[in-house]
Image 1 (cartoon, rainbow, N blue to C red):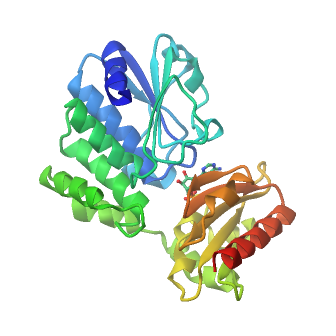
Image 2 (cartoon, protein in one colour; image 1 turned 120 degrees about the vertical axis):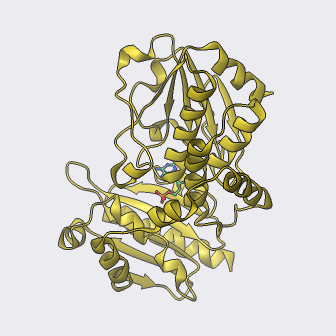
Length: 314
Ligand code: AMP
């Protein structure tokens, strides 16, 4: 039902602005870009814009449009891959005529006039493939590349538990459309030398509790020494999971002034951690979430909650 209604809204509006979440990852950008390109190619007379903060090192994947408040007049706004309102990137998303949410995170914040949420999908990009296919919108090589980058990004190259047989079916269809497989995989795994140095030193910062909970706190001083930005520090988030005995872990990255506190990345091989993240201005998937800690005290509290969750799970 929602699928048909969303299609009708897209057909109805001449101007469509597509948002995604802050600190974008390949899935946020891939779902935003594939929807944008597909609408443009299906309806060449529509104006479709991508809104949000700049994309940092992911500029090989996508670029934002210059969008200002006037653009939102009589516009349809679609937000992809974003569970809750505070995480939406781009300040005027609520100034349009009609708001649609398309997402694959648990639907805890039911914003928008219309929603399509499938929290079992591997990625928002996988949902995008299914929607565009059902709507019979154009999916050419360019659209396929964006979808593929999103799927590979959010499944950790088809490794995480949300990867399903359908994910592989979609990937197979995308390959038939000629996606640049080696190029995208290479871009997604590429790191700078500084990031590689941080990846090896993260084990020096890591504490592993006997429960199997682990944590690393990376300060601005650590980052400065290695000349790595807070965004680039994301490259180390999955590293502790490679260690035997580590069950769930967090990486706390100190924010850069004028921001204060820490950005928390939660990951887990079993214990559910999004319920923990929700208590700290965050959320996400059961085994991969993000949150915010206002100071070191809150980081300590987060660590204690993680240890308890791992013990309870065992
Ligand atoms: P990250 O650790 O930043 O890679 O995020 C892991 C997952 O949690 C992604 O699906 C994010 O969209 C989600 N996430 C990260 N930070 C937040 C937050 N503050 N609120 C809600 N979801 C988040």
